[in-house]
Image (cartoon, rainbow, N blue to C red; front, side):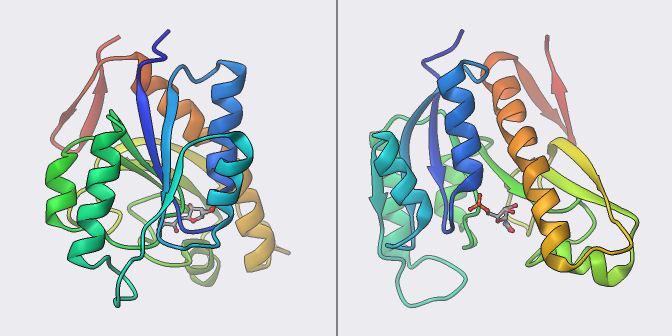
Length: 206
Ligand code: GAR
């Protein structure tokens, strides 16, 4: 058991992955604590969910840019997460790129979930990219965050078959369902097992 493993969760959207993580925390399959939820969108579902669950939550005004945080905003994110003494930063649908200061503050301690089997289809609307490309199998990936786009070492993946009748919406729904299993399982492994990153490979100690 590792209830002292503290998660800082960042999201911009409805927060269904956070919901799955919170459910795993509640039932004990993920032995950790949700220390704080932080969002760049004041009306985000993820903040509403945190409120309902009685988990500390903060909105940070992101500044004028569309794809990144202002320097001030990024410093605020860092401060909130450090004050909450988080061991791992968990990006759960956080839609802005994090820059050098943030990456340095939590080096090797930031994970993200992405809706494709990386390294295929990094970037936005990965399920749509997969459908347009005509792949027969796609899925989702939990990976460490580095300075690139969806390019860090891979923690875990789950495959999802692309069906002939799929639309972007139906495929996205099944990928979402796979994410809800994969993310809590990967976090449970990170919380309880030693690991190291050798080159591009995440190697588990136990
Ligand atoms: C998830 O599908 C996640 O993979 C994606 O945003 C969605 C968030 O859903 N993230 C990215 O595309 C990151 N580049 P949620 O708010 O319901 O958890």
